[in-house]
Length: 161
Image (cartoon, rainbow, N blue to C red; front, side):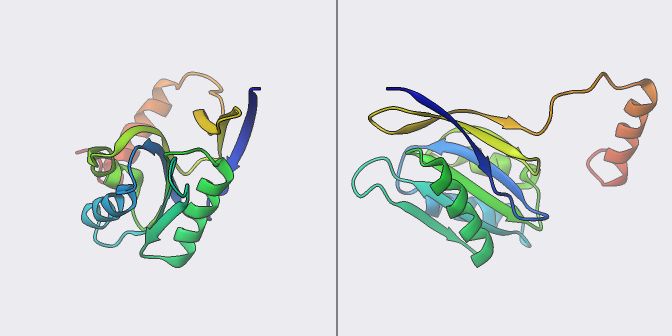
């Protein structure tokens, strides 16, 4: 038996998510520390699905609503060793390297505010994430003016000098 599902991640308004795979119950605590140390103003929730033992969804965070949103995403995906981070008042670019540096993290599927569908394979053993559909398909190649606008925008918001 093999079934494929597309599970839409429910992202709260004005929030970003990071979805990934890790391998140990310590994930929740280590991701909590990574996030609070990456941006002092960050608000977030973290959820992690265990893949053995009691197979619980473990959760933490410094914002109840974002923690509940992370639990909602992790529970809907239902794959073992899957984690969801939902954040506000910071962007994935502020926290992604710290998340990736957590010893348990094996893979990052996406870091985005776009609509996301998680492609899940389900077998008799359980569920696993094959990948994600992040946002929409390209509609063309940027023009010289659009490239100049991109350069100007990155400098305006302080990401480039």
